[in-house]
Amino acid sequence: MKISLSEIRELLGKDLSRKQLEEAFGLHSFEIEDIEEIEGDTVIDLDVLPNRSSDALSVLGLARELSAVLDIPLKDDLLKKPLPTFNEADALKAQIDEGSSATVYGVAQINGVEVKESPKWLQNFLIKQGQKPINNLVDATNYVLFFLGQPTHVFDADKISGDNKIIAVRPARANERITTLDDKEYELDDTVSVIYDAGSDNKEALALAGIKGGKHAELDLNTKNIILESARFDPTATRLASKKLALRTDALKRFENDIPDLLPFYGMDLLIKTIQEIAGGELVSVSFAQIKEPRENPKIKLELEKINKRLGTDFTMDYVKDTLRRLDFEMEDDYARAPWWRTDIGILEDISEEIIRIYGLNNIAPQPLPKTNAKRDLLKSFYWSEKIRDFLTKKGFVELTNSSLQDKGELELANSLASDKNFYRDNLRYQVLKALDKNEPNAPLLGIYDAFKVFEIGNVYKDGKEYSSVCIAIRPVAKKKREARAEQLLLDLKVEFEKSFGVVLPDSQESGLLEFPLDLLFELPMEEEYPKLPTLKDLKYKAFSQFPFMLRDIAAWADSKDAEETMRELIKKHAGELLRRIDKFDEFEKDGKVSIALHIVFQADDRTLTDEEVGEIMQKIERDYAESGFEVR
Image 1 (cartoon, rainbow, N blue to C red):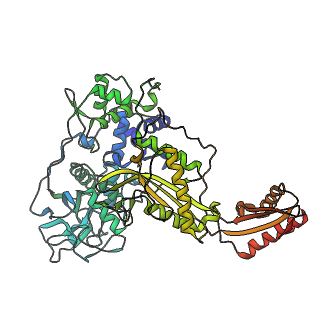
Image 2: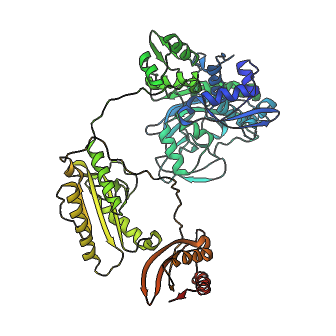
């Protein structure tokens, strides 16, 4: 959201410097995204987050925010004036149909306007907001949008049926179509609400409610009589409709962030006055429909001790109340109520946040944490998880961390995140085995030539209860006699585990896989401290390449075992950035010579390697081997 220096000076009556504005906004309210010069004016672009969009996504809202931070009263705040009242006549009526997204819907008719170019002040205002001026009527709606934060719209009244016109909001009909102002056609259903001409025979759709106007009642140069619209639409329904249509607008951005219930009335008042000032015309009638009473912000008790404890401050009650008054809160004894345009304040924590951001987080002096000698009881689940991790990682096992959600289980989610994440897992082995299946083809790339050894510790939900489970899996790389070897390796590990921990584990569920509840160890004696596991340092993350790897083997006779290092250096010299790893897989002596065999893994980050490319590298390696006195086998 943008605001200019001249607008700030006009609304606050102060000539503030750029540095003052940067500090006031940046340290207390919103991040500054950009500052630029437009039309000879300094324009600040601020990142207004969704929680503040209902009150601060407007020039007036940003000026009000600056007023509170700097403790400079606004010269004139439209929203602090009494709620506008309007005269209604039979010539025009607003209507909200059941099932539509509107909660407040208002229309007004002005006859005898003149469509023309906007005055310079309005054009400059819109240009600073990054908007292109169109004509005085459309520009007036954009002025209300960006100055006040209220989306509005203008229809050509003569393109709407009847002398006594009814403009209403309803759910769209199945397969109903509408062409919007940008000449794009959309097919609708009842999840999308439309503004329609209730007096016409076919209930003609005039606009997509809260999103964009339609072509049917579009303004043109011959427009003389107009109908204005100012409304509030349900934020969730409007956002979902926009997502379905893949259509986003500045109006939608306001509606989806929950504009205040009373804002449409102030928006209509400002729009009427602006249009009559720049386009003339006579106001005929204004009509509003509401489906419920405006929301009232709750009274919140100011509990000073809780506020200071939460913030680490020693504010007095007078300071707290003075800060809230600057933010236009109503005060009654020790209770505070946020102004109606703040829809984000509902609990004491919200008030605490308001107080500290106005004070400035940068002004809080750092305090050392209090020293404590209190000794906490060890958490059994954490203690035994760490002991098992320590034992298994020393045996060459790798820990897995899988999602706790999967595509089958005992406990189904009411609102699943995805089709393969609609159950809370009832075991660990299902995803452990899937991880092994996925990684098995990458064994050479991972440097695994003997067996995958993995484990996972995590919560599961089984037989109506949640508990921690441990899953250990071993899968030999070689497929010959895989099951028998996996079972033997797991049996050897199980014997050693039972001896180390003093516990009897259940039998394996399938070849090379064992899962058991962690609480099997809970009755065992514990030490007085958690196990101290080694800290890994200087680790760097590098993503896997999306392209396939190539595995090549090379074996050669050398005079001694010390030749292995030279062999590796020659491989690195020619493989360069394509080299992923070198692993020795065989070594033996014969007739005074040593045979050394190495696996070489090649892979590129940006392409699929070819046999010719890798073959050429291998030829160079073999040539250098020969020149170095190695005999390639």
